[in-house]
Length: 372
Image (cartoon, rainbow, N blue to C red; front, side, top):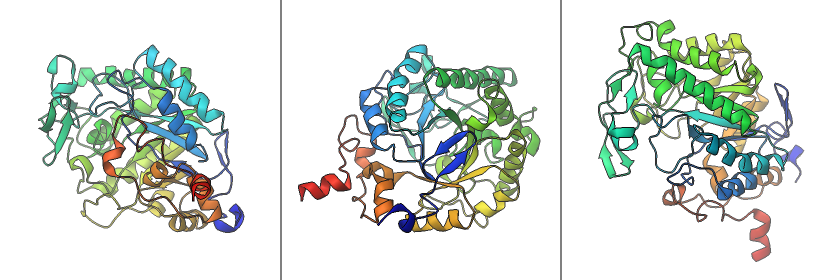
């Protein structure tokens, strides 16, 4: 069965700004923790991304913009020239398959721990409010979340500059664009949401003030990249990392509406409920964001092939990002095109392991057929 009969909308080409995508599937950013203690991209990572370059667009795993941004073991960084140089092997491997790749820029904020920080300092956040439930895996074992230190007003410009420098290094590394990670309870999200932002300065209180940090980051990055090479990711329905604010609908519609004026490449929404919903009202749907954002919209979080086809054919989304299915199916798009069955889902223990097992060793459908 060919692509046109299997999923004609999902597998159709798409023009994303000045980039020509061969289909509308996006490989979602997924933390895989293969960069080692030096947080240096490597040949194994290049192989992993190249295997999955059947996607129309790849968004890299979340990549920390500074040592302060660290909060997860063995994740890659983009805060040194050496890291930028090491990323080149990844971008070259993906470009060899004629697929563009964006780098996701990340600061963990309060979802970190002092053991990740220089001189064991507390992690930073919009306000001194801890993640209440769960534990964090740290260099010294599982720990409870700490109460973070609220950033001083005069510290914020330096973090904005960290984002700008990271975007600059992403360009040196050969990426085609960047995605600003403003989701999942990490630093930017804690500024946006009223639950985690109790500030009384120009970065707190009103919608305009809570959006200000993201606005400054976007405008700094736009001095490095054209707008059509910059995306932003939101999780309006999510409870991950203790998120979920009573005014979530107002907050995210405001932010999306404000971002509309820049002509960005896309907004990427975790609109699905597969990984938890805060249940503070009805879920936010892509149709709501269509009303305030005129650029490309990426849907994400638990979509099946069939649901993705409906979302795109009905024009609710322009692109759909797949996460977990891409872990165990390096040839996911080819499987979609031919209605081939998917590999069994990967074991969660393999997601954050340290070697090729559970990473680059999943067979393609044709490899499996040859073996059987």
